[in-house]
Amino acid sequence: MQTKNISDLIRIQAKKNPSKAAIKLSKKNIFGKYVYPSYSFDFLNNRINKLCNKLIELGVKPGHRVLFFVKPNLDFCAITFALFRLGAIPVFIDPGMKRKYFVKCIVEVKPDVLIGIPKVHYMRHFYKENFNNIKIFITTGKLSNIYSKSIYMRLGKYSDMFKTYQPGKDDLAAILYTSGGTGAPKGVEYSHNIFSAQTDMLQKEFNLTKDDLDIPGFPLFSFFTLGMGMTSCIPDMDPSKPSECDPAKLYKNITDTKATYIAGSPAIWERLVDYCMKENLKLNSVKYVVMFGAPVSVSIHQKFSTILPNGSTYTPYGATECLPIANISGKAILSGLHESILAGHGTCVGKILTDVKIKIIKQEPNQIDNIQQTTELAIGQIGEIIVHSKNMTRAYFENPQDTSLSKIKDGNILWHRMGDVGFIDEVGMLWFCGRAKHVVDLNGKKYYPSQVESIYNQHPKIKRSALIEGVDKKPAIVIERFDQKDVIEPMFLMDLKNLSQTNIHTKDIHEFHAMAIFPVDTRHNIKIDRTSLEQEIRGQM
Image (tube, rainbow, N blue to C red):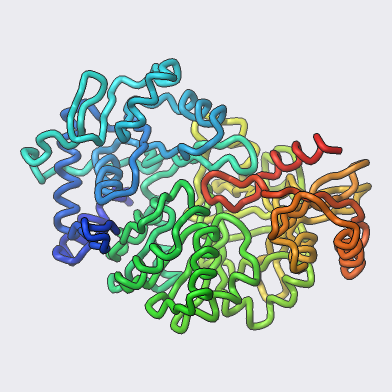
């Protein structure tokens, strides 16, 4: 069976619905009112072809690795799909990543091409040694200069016809770097087949059609919804700083466009729901609020249930290496599962998707070469989560060591080690109990982050908590307060100690610390950077 280029999905939609809006941009006119300029699917497809011809002239070839730093706009997806169509390999790295990791990623991936906004080309002069491998510099500015060639200069003269590159089965389509929130970032290799599988799985899971409209809080998600024939509207926000988004602007974008599907970091939607509740507003058009990147609290589901008269929240479980794996709605959680979550069972991430296979195996910190070396655990037992699916990536770029650590051979197939611990319950639901590396083990007794933290997070003064290894390697809790105080007063400490005695998972915890604001990951602005947190707390001990 021939592998399809992922850009063919746009070509197909251009034939089916040529005049339908594909991509819209939320922007204000000179009077301060929102307007939504757009590309139709036919225009988008033709523009992709023009960009392909322009990029070929600038020297970009199939197989070239292209470092990609373009802000979300009407051409963000057009340029990306053009790279797919001509067989080049876009490389996505979070620009807000810690500098040492950011530099490591660039050096590791050895890019041939840089496409970026003018600011990127200006900044690269200060770090020339990190860009030595790059031979082709392309700017998204309107004019070329001695340092970079403009992708837009005389773009109109180029043909809107282009023959799509036909990839081989294992040809790379893109390299997506993990956020580095739980360790050094890794370049995840994506094939065209994996992008297609993800698109199919998301469309089936949410029953999405061409009549749905998407507001992507995470720009790369537009790839999937455009491939389904949906309209994708870029919101008025900086996707690199989701926790700083303006909820009033988001609400306006959603209601103006009658968006039905909104997806992104919980940090975005938490700000939005708090704003809506404060202003007594509803999201009447929205059917799906999809949150990913970190566990979502029961309280967020409860809040959204009051402002979504025609929809629900959803929390698909997965990772850059394999997404989606499981999914659950807020309605299902609030129908009874929330009681178990609040009691410390863990976080229920829902029903395992069709064609996804999951095993819970005995936790093992070292490399596992073959599935025969694992011990599969029974229903209800907590262990390491491993997964096999058609949307699972097979390797990390130029990183055989981490690839070997994360994959388990099973005949002709591979299992991916999620790096998470959890269990499958008696009705087949998957429960998440935390990252394997964050489990505290005291003389053989294991303390799981998701189980422990849910108990303390119910205290009215606590915004969130984090389990760490404290004095004498005993479990300890770090608290982020709503009032951002970094102290624990005597009465509050008594509260915490009394709270510890209410649950089997917390009864042995007596050590507490406070931090004004938790460090978080750069991509979603909500996943706790536990490495930084632990280093800071241990420095205070």
